[in-house]
Length: 349
Picture 1 (cartoon, one colour):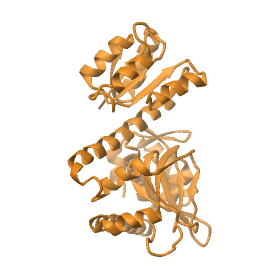
Picture 2 (picture 1 turned 90 degrees about the horizontal axis):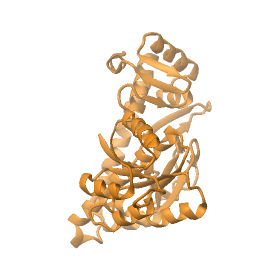
Picture 3 (picture 1 turned 90 degrees about the vertical axis):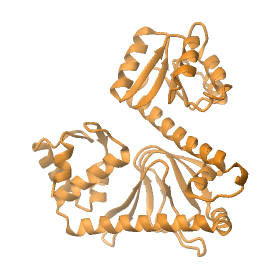
Picture 4 (picture 1 turned 60 degrees about the horizontal axis):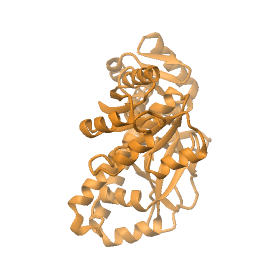
């Protein structure tokens, strides 16, 4: 369970927000002013801090400044939660090093999504900093995929995509390889009849978009976001130079490609031999794993995406979901699917 520090001087808002966060499986500690918040941050070392700006004793900008200059707390993700919406206020907070800025009133989903993505990003950066410290005497070498991901974060071109936005299309020139910092996306192809087949789901920390580094090969599939996503990309030419100097890294990439191929083969076998119930159940479980959902937590995925990954007609998938619902295996509200009986879902044949 991730620990979150909420700094808010308004008692009602503090309690309501804390309750929302606790229901979303966060351990929440609270402070009623900036000075109290600084002390709690240093003593408790939370995974993330959500702070108001206008507060007594010490405002949110002052809190961020103190923590950003402390070696122990400077890497804790920091999100401002405030009714101050003027551009200069937002710019000031971001220039000081805030990770995000959410205005009041806010949507519960918006707050949770921002917190989860910033924690995920901070986790990646923490891993990379650890690797950097361990290889300080070899900092010009990129010896592993983790080192490569660090290189992406430090040197890559940043991209932001909205939900359901195409990152690149099948047949387009392969300019970049990407690392996901936030979001989930699907790689998919169209068969000769125009039916979409999803070949892979990618989540935070995954690399994708790699093709031949010796030949001018186009992208072999289309990449489309399932939710709002942040990526960093490195050009194919720059990656080729890195691989030329680090043969051990090339072997790790070959292993990654092998795992990708194994996953695709397994998916194809399932599509060929499994019945619709099994395909649908397996696909729901796959999305649950990729989204890191807890039991009983709803997933928000379009029926078309589910059908594409499962390799079944959308109409067949909808009928199967209705059957699962009638059996009290899942619950459906609009696009949301909530698993009621995870074990029965896993046992479907």
